[in-house]
Amino acid sequence: MGKTLVVGAGGVSHAAVHKMAMNPEIFTEITLASRTKAKCDAIAKSVKERVGVDIKTAALDAYDVADTVKLIKETGAEILVNLALPYQDLVLMDACLEAGCHYLDTANYEPEDEAKFEYHWQWAYQDKFKKAGLTAILGSGFDPGVTSVFAKWLKKHKLDTIRQIDVLDANGGSNDQEFATNFNPEINLREVLAEVRHWENGEWKHSPAMTHKVEFDFPAIGPKNMYLMYHEELESLSTHFPEIERARFWMTFGDAYITHAKVLENVGMTRIDPVMHDGKEIIPIQFLKTLLPDPGDLGAETKGKACIGDIATGQAKDGSGEKTYYIYNICDHEECYREVGSQAVSYTTGVPAMIGAAQVLKGNWTEPGVWNMEQLDPDDFMDMLNNQGLPWQVHELDGPVTF
Image (tube, one colour):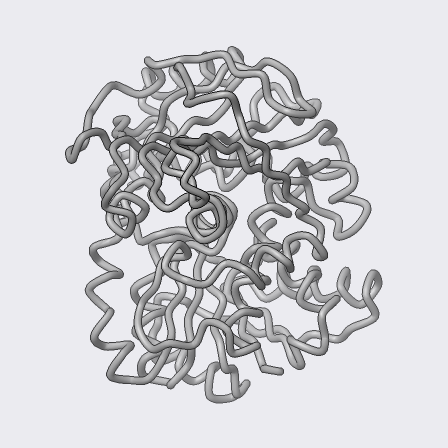
């Protein structure tokens, strides 16, 4: 159906490009580009060996708008799938506008010199994309992404309103590393150590990072400690579903991870401002990223399952009063590795990126403008989750969460 340009060659791209190649009737031609072409070539080699499909590769400086515009035009790409760093969202959106190409990403824009991610920078592009007749899809990963589509599906099929919603992200996987993040270490640590915010009664409530802990019994995983965090879908869900009284995000962490993260923060290794070292300027968290394992390399040794989903409470569509539903996916690290050579965290982000791009190329999500996932029709996306490796379940609970 369409030519696709994927920017970024990390673990998520590895999963997404393999899944695109498995759907050649939708993704007729794939080009993978990043600053380091050798990384793209390695993914292309894996795709050829596993799927038998040839993909093109290119070197690209994603911060250079002219360079990206040139590549879009050379490839004839109908959509650019941004799987690079969130620092690059705006320049890639600029390139799409100039080149006449649709846009999709998995994480909202974050300034490189400030650990603060919000949608207002990207929402400001609404009129530009409408005027250009182009579509921009924001946050088509799992969280954000699938968790927002889950909420929309519940609102379309089960609930007239959503009064409160909790997004729960549990990674029950384990590997042989003393300390490793499950996605880009720099982005992960900036996110985890940021001030916590959640939406309640029309305003943001603030608390220090890693201070609010609850044990929850996750399907297929069991009891795990989860911590209240801020995540970008809280901003978009509370904006687009204004009836929401409370929206929270939770993620599981083991005690060893928390200890390592706090020690690294205490000694300054998670700083994002430049410091002088041996006469040279470095940014500590970027140096730390160099020392830590690449999450994309951990697939072979990662075992266990991940479970991500929403618990939402609201008025039932059948008029039976207030109901609570838990909608979630369970993903197995080893099964993901057997299929595409990625662990489940990369898989659960890469597959929804593929499905979101497919919605654009199939003509389901083509209204000009800038859209979050909960603003779009969920049904075909949900069907593709079931047949593309991320099957979901929904169960009615006895009542709202008590934590």
